[in-house]
Amino acid sequence: MPSDVTGKKAKIAIIDDEKALVETLKSFLEERGFSVISAYDGASGLELIKREKPDIIILDITMPELDGRDVLIQLKKNEDTKSIPVIMQTVKNEPFDVDYGMELGADDYLPKPCEVHRLLKHIDAILEKRKG
Image (cartoon, rainbow, N blue to C red; front, top):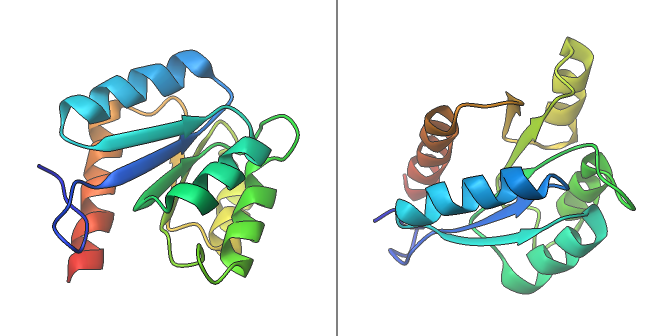
C-alpha cells in the first residue's frame, strides 16, 4: 500500500476541471491503495487542500475561477501547504510553461494526456523522496 512519511495511506488531491479525467485517475489510484480527494476548479481545490492536507497534489493549469498557477502561488505562500508536493498535469507543455510552473514551486510537470502508469511512477518517486 502506498504510504506517506508516517506510514498511513497516502492521500492525493486531484484538482482539474475535466471530470472524466479526474474520475479515471481517482479509480486508478484508489485501486492501487491511495486515498483520493478531488475538486473541479481552482478555488474549491484550494479550500480542499487547506482542509485535507494531502500528501501530493495533481494540479491542472487551465481551470475556471482560479487557474492552477494561481492555486500553486497561494499554496506556496501558505505555511500549512507550502511543503505539499505538486505535480502539474496540463496541456500547457511549451518550454516556457514548464519552466514557469517549476519556478512557481511545482515539483514535477507532466503533459496531458499522461499515461497513468507514468503518473504513478512520478507519484511513487515523490513519496519515496519525502520518506528519505
